[in-house]
Every structure is written in structure tokens, then in C-alpha cells.
Image (cartoon, rainbow, N blue to C red; front, side, top):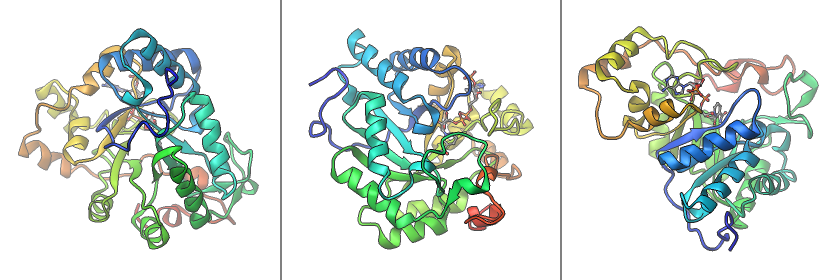
Amino acid sequence: MSATGGGAAAAAPRPVPRIGLGTAVQGPKPDPVRRAVLRAIELGYRHFDTAAHYATEAPIGEAVADAVRAGSIASRDEVFITSKVWCADAHRDRVLPALRRTLSNLQMEYVDLYLVHWPVTMKAGRYSAPFTEEDFELFDMRAVWEAMEECHRLGLAKAIGVCNFSCKKLETLLSFATIPPTVNQVEINPVWQQRNLREFCRDKDIQLMAYSPLGAKGTHWGSDSVMDSGVLHEIAKAKGKSVCLRWVYEQGDCLIVKSFDETRMKENLDIVDWELTEEDRQRISKIPQRKINQGRRYITEHGQYKSLEELWDGEI
Ligand SMILES: NC(=O)c1ccc[n+]([C@@H]2O[C@H](COP(=O)([O-])OP(=O)(O)OC[C@H]3O[C@@H](n4cnc5c(N)ncnc54)[C@H](OP(=O)(O)O)[C@@H]3O)[C@@H](O)[C@H]2O)c1
């Protein structure tokens, strides 16, 4: 067994860890990501979220191998790795080769969870923005999902799921899936609480996984509206803790939060053994709702999604 391998047969599927470290970062990647992930493992993070599109798979794999060598973990099997197939590989015959590339980047024999990154298909080879109308093709959900199921059957993905799916798209997927999605990874934070989607997913036994739980302040897809919310500031000041993350946790969702700063990485783990008060919850429930990461770059004049309404099936 290799240091980071473990063997596909050795690791059984397991519950998704409730807290994970995000790795969607702008700017220089390999060294900062490798250092941050290694430190995160030492601090107790066991779930790492990546994607072919983030170009952070290789440094995560290196950090896990470093952690095994340093003895922080006994083997790769002690961490939970989520990765995602990018839109340019959301074609029936491109999903499995894309996963094999992901595994090669990670230097691993399996991912714990493999997700469809967006309900969007682009022409092969279109990896980086800006995207133009000509880059898009029709997203064939059935073809993509059958390829995802094959990844699971081969033992290369212990679980499979989707991202950025509305209730309507999940309903369609469930109507033909042989293997139902384990997870729907979507934006969730106090400014975009996703009450209907949560109810739907609970009913269908799909685990919601929150991305941008802090609103992704400082990124090109994020906004200040969560971190600068007056209500959240007041509650956080009284508690001295991360109210946003605790709120997501209390909803029963898994969450992925990105910080490469050691103090904030520790702070973001400190959400388990305390609670918001009923009054806090009531105040948070009244925060005006607005989706931050709307996916505007997937809207085209003549393509599959001509409006945000169409992309999100009116659930925006
Ligand atoms: N499936 C999808 O389509 C999708 C879309 C977006 C994101 N994601 C995943 O979800 C992960 C998390 O979401 P995100 O990165 O968009 O946003 P996020 O985790 O809500 O916010 C990240 C930002 O908040 C800062 N931060 C983190 N902890 C903090 C704290 N305790 N106090 C103050 N600032 C703090 C970080 O800066 P520092 O690093 O300087 O602390 C960073 O600028 C991503 O990295 C990615 O893995 C998935």
C-alpha cells in the first residue's frame, strides 16, 4: 500500500465530515495550498474540497503525503477528499478520463466524493474564463450522470453527487439515477439560507454541503454582505465566535470553508460545542435573502440558460 494510496478496496464509504477546508483560491497555488493543507491536517481538518477547475488537486495530494510521512495521519484513508468534474468534461465520454486525471493529480487511488461542478456543459478544452457563447453545449444530465455512476462502480469515487442543482434538477436526476446523488454542494450562508432546497434534500436523503458559508468575501465570486452584516456582527461580538458557520452547522448541513490563515483555520473549527440562542436564530432568519454566487457567466443569449431564472429553475 502506498503512503497516500490505501487501495480502492481498503476504504469503505463513510459519512461526509461536517467541516471541510475549501481550496478555491486566486493567485499562486502550489506552495501556499500545500502548506495550508498540511497545517490544516495538523489542526484536525479531515475533509478537503477541491476541483479540477481550482488546480489545487496536486498540492492537496502532496500535503496528504507529507502528513502521512510526518505521522500526523496514518494513511490517506484518514482524510476525505472531494473533487469535481469541470463543465468542459461534463460529456459522457470525458467524465471517467477527467476523474483519472484528478486521481493522478492527487496521487490517490480514489476520491471519497466526486461531484458534477455545475449543471453546465462546455466544449472540451474550455477550462478558464472568460467564456463566450460558442463555448457552451447542451448539458445532457443523463449522459453525465451515467458516467458518474460508472466512476462509482469502478471504485474510483466512493460517493457521487452534484453542485449547484435546484430542486427541479434534482427531481429530474432522481427520476433516472440508478445511484442517487449523495450530496448537493451549493451556496449556503445566512444571506442565502436555502430553506426550500434543504427541505427537499432532507426528504430525498441528499446531504446539503454549504460552500461560501462566509459569503466568500475577497473573491471574485463572493461579496461582503455576509461578513459585513450588522446582525451577524452583533451576535458574533457577544459570542466571540463564528456565528455564520455555527448557523450552517445547526441546519444539519456539511460545510466547506476556506481560510489559509492559521488563526482563522482554528476559529473556523470552533463551532461544535456551543449553540446560538433561539433569539439569535430568529434574528438570522429575518436577514434579507440574496444569492451571492449567481453563476452569471453561464448565462448566454442563445444557449441552454438564457437567464438566471432558467439556470436556477426559478429558485433564485
Ligand atoms: N461547488 C461550487 O460551485 C463552489 C463554489 C464556490 C466555492 N466552493 C468551495 O467552497 C469553499 C469555501 O467557499 P469560498 O472560498 O467561496 O468562501 P468562504 O469560505 O465563505 O470565504 C472565504 C474567505 O473568507 C475569509 N475567511 C475565512 N475564515 C475567516 C474568518 N474566520 N474570519 C474572517 N475571514 C475569514 C478567507 O480569507 P483567509 O484565507 O485570508 O482567511 C477568504 O477570503 C471554496 O474554497 C471551494 O472549495 C465550491
